[in-house]
Length: 473
Figure 1 (cartoon, rainbow, N blue to C red):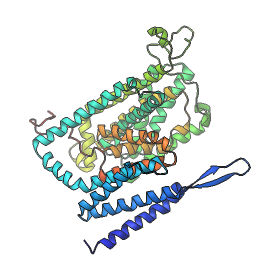
Figure 2 (tube, rainbow, N blue to C red):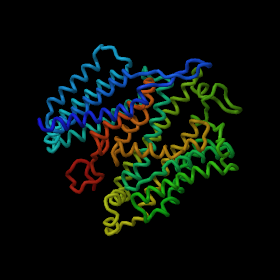
Figure 3 (spheres, one colour):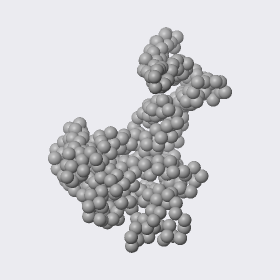
Figure 4 (cartoon, rainbow, N blue to C red):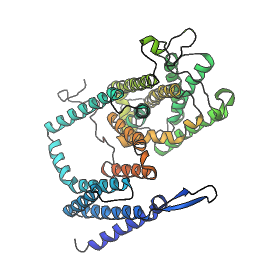
């Protein structure tokens, strides 16, 4: 160990130097407005940068020690960082307390991880361990559902929290739809936002130009998006891997450019506004009733509140997401679902077994696109205004990141990844300049400790042995 210590210190020092070089422009100083006549000036925050770099140095040192088998020194460094982070020592920023404390916690976990992994592995190998794991996953899913149902009635359910909840559930639904294509069928789709846009514009055009309501357009939007999914599926039947990703990405850009340039139909970059929102048995969520109609407050005999519409939208997207989940779980146990998983594992062997890969790919694209169309229809009804700028490539990347981060093929993993990827930047918004640093740190830690996703292991859809729990017929 003594011979390796200089190399470990050199590596930690180099890591700290890189962190200082990258962080000096983000943490070291920021521009401030000192008046209309004097312009901009710099506000230096080198103390913040020094504390962050020191934390990085000690953290990297601890990680290297743990990798070399010196777990107790790594845990000791983690304890020191955690104590400093939670201590009442005065630091320039509250974020630094969190940064130092979380760094200490991560280091402690890294030092203890081999022991915990050995204990979990020995326990999980037994039938009792497998049963406990299955029961724990099941009850955790029910707990998440219960929390989602009761969230509007919690004390912290203000307008901002409800808006964030609607946004997270929208991405959960999109993630579950893309999970069919990527997680189950193994087809890398980088243009998934195109079907999202098709559903949104289908509702916007049919409602504003033909007077159709939300509930009438919802299935139509899903069918139109599914048709576009089939149209995408035909050109990519012979493609795999990176080539498939490039073509699907191009398809997404084609749809966006068509929406941007077909001004007569889509109104181009100006977008479509005044889109009617969804109704509750014909009742609108407005203060005054339209001609010949009634409002939700009049129907229920309660005073008008702007929160009624937000709560209704929350439960609406929750119901649509649950329908997506139940449909996907049912499809996985049908022959088409088994064909998706066989295609993902080995397309050549799948074809040798008599499974038609053409039909399998087309059904995966169509079903996944259908749920994106449903989500797009809801998005247009909620926003009441859409434009091509809402459906850029970064949206497809975020949805794909949700599927990969959650664990491909895992339904509950998509939920956890959506909460992290969509909710975390909003929760950390009060941190100002440090918001994206905290978000990036969280992503790095997840990829280091869970490289295969938050829920990397899932039970097979069908078991060959009928005595096994959850077995198929």
